View 1: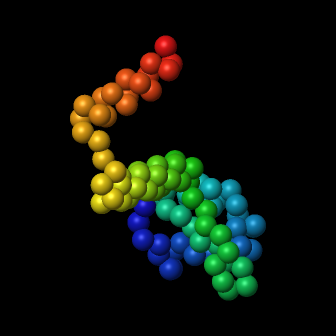
View 2 (view 1 turned 180 degrees about the vertical axis):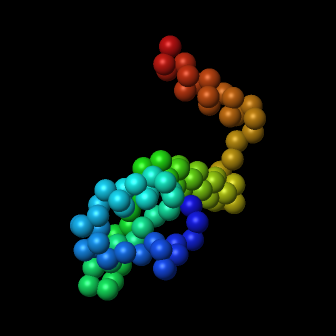
View 3 (view 1 turned 135 degrees about the horizontal axis):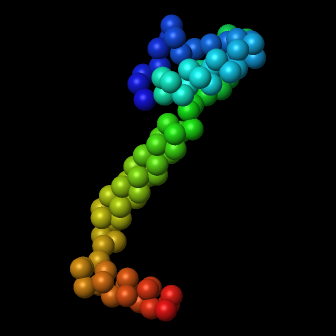
Amino acid sequence: MNTISISKDIEPLSEFRKRSADFIKRLKKDKQPIVLTQYGKSAAVLMDVTEFERFTNRLELLEDLLEAKQQVEKGQTYTMEEAKQRIENHLSKWK
């Protein structure tokens, strides 16, 4: 996903209402979000579904990495042996 282009990626809601099928085709082809405006102000963002899934997966990964970094900084870590034991204990519950 590239940076939003003011000249190409911002559209009034009235245009979306008139040409929604064209907007969907454009989303699928360009994989670029479209900002819809209402009364001259941003109101919504349209995204291709695959791009949205990719974006949310990346966001989840970044949140997980941030949480892990914070845990390390707080000393909330395990040795390799402790980690193996915790995993084995957890898996044994599923047998």
